[in-house]
Image (cartoon, rainbow, N blue to C red; front, side, top):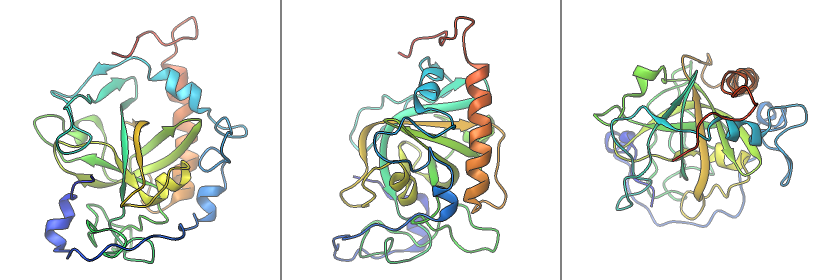
Length: 253
């Protein structure tokens, strides 16, 4: 079960009776515009874009940069490290649905019992992020385990999220509990072909999150810029992290 985000306590959201989501929010044109963010099932990433397989090959090795490990859910084993490669940090976990932020037909107290009407970071106009339309990723709040800001990960940092043969570019848009990892917005899940229902959707495993250190999109809500910058950074990351043979130099443990 998804844990409450840091913003829930501050927002004081009440728990209401859940309802069934009979439809899913359409993604904006900026997200669909570049293949690889929401290509049809079975596509190998994108037409002319970075392939999921190439990004996964570049993060096959793991040199931990965290001082401990995270849980995917309350009660689960603490076995997820934050790993580092040249130019990025990454982890491999599940994907729980974050529906926090702007209230709408797909994200509200009825569709999500853990809904909070605020995110850790806001749009350039001061409004909350819209989880239903903006692909964003949640990172754990800074703690003794790992401090994201020390690795150039902050509001608007560009991330590549991979599930199966799909790549979804997103931005860092919210902070989660200190000990939990593996959460992204409704729109991120939708773009990856994952059921985005915050109550029964998400992915139990098999999701890779790559954060490009020192990157950023401004304004944070510019999904088009996140896609363009994500493609560029992904290509550079793959180039940097290939062994001379063209294969990764480490094996993930």
